[in-house]
Image 1 (tube, rainbow, N blue to C red):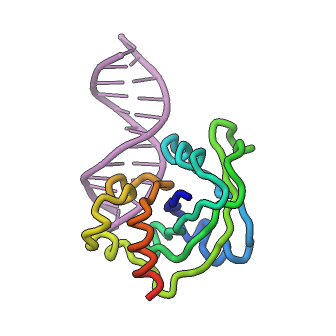
Image 2: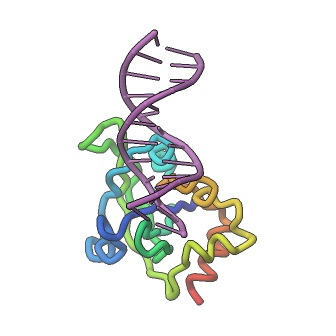
Image 3: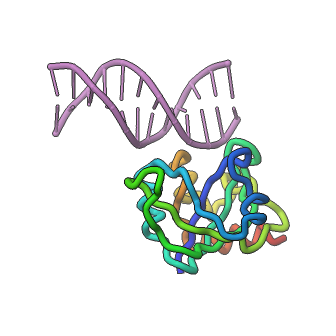
Length: 133
DNA sequence: GCCAACGTTGGC
DNA sequence: GCCAACGTTGGC
């Protein structure tokens, strides 16, 4: 199983909307590196939901329920379907990620503009421990 | 609102 | 294929 982090601006698509929608496609990724990460996703993989621009925190965990398929808006890009699994008790702030020594190599920190990035198993565990406190 | 860090575009 | 100019993302 692989782990991911997916960013969304909450005023465009928020965690609460994701929860209400149950299963929804992850749309509007227009970056090839992010797309390639989406193509690498397998059914059953888990992903953090991160609120960018406003919030700046990981708010919960999602599961990939359908692997990549062409984006009808632009066939060069793809969609995956995701489902909210559970919210964090304590959202994990960007500032927490930045200050934690075990997370210094996180892909999203190294490349802040990448909207879909891989998370290692170790990073996943560390972040979940903070979020479930 | 600013700006750093990228990514994309288009002329050559 | 290079690179300057421009556009976008996203934190501050």
